[in-house]
Length: 381
Ligand code: MG
Image 1 (cartoon, helix red, strand yellow):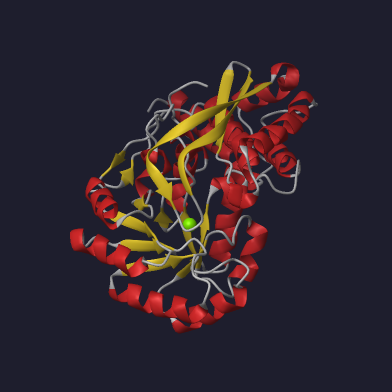
Image 2: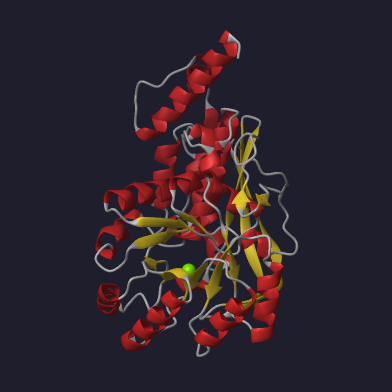
């Protein structure tokens, strides 16, 4: 590395430290950018893209063959950052409600804003509305893609993270007929860990079908499907004997006391998914759950996900990083922060037949982050 390259890289790393609240950040490049009137030409555009699924996707709650996700692009100073929203009806989100929030955000980008002040802008995005986190995620992801591209480094490098530390991702098997489940498990041959969806009447038959074709480590997600604590206890004790590593959201979010009771009686870790959206939810959940499943679509983007990771670590909780049905764009955004977590479940793009983006390949179950700037994703809106 030449001295010039070293100085350039050092400047970028120091700038990245600003993310953690340092005010002494500076570099020649940064101070020059600060002097520019960056709000002069910020353009925000968005588009709905229909993502077709390879298989009908069924979980305890519902079934679907396609998803209409909303994609966002922020363009400024010759750089474009892109983000994705996967609206989820569980949280009263639709493509229409998502676009409504994005339209509200337009005024933020028209006002006297400097994109380099992304923490302030990220907070303003979070405050647009109470819920609708998928829309906020799209905006925050696009903003962070823009920032890292602006400094010409991959986002993981901007955040000081080692791409070699990305944990193996699990591959999800949705609820289906026993024959289809066996076929899906066979198709998932390249993935060393499976996440099995349960929460209907035939959970045991599903797991037995999976075990008849593979001995891989299994994780189980009931998606709030078990409504009786004694039934849940029995099922979890049985699942432990089947080599299951942990149970995600065994009972409805509203049954907090039952889940607390359950956790006292089982050996397997209980992970909150539907119960957790933002950092503020976590202290209470520590009383009933061993860990949390962070999804950018629930947190409202990368910046809140980082706060959630810090909060969960402070409470000595395990951390999983999951996703909705998202293209390679949304998956890439989560993958960049995945070196910070214990378990990764970033397979939403692998379930899509017409992914409009190309991101980071999965090799032997591990997402291999490339060294391109920003999210490192190819493709246009
Ligand atoms: Mg889940």
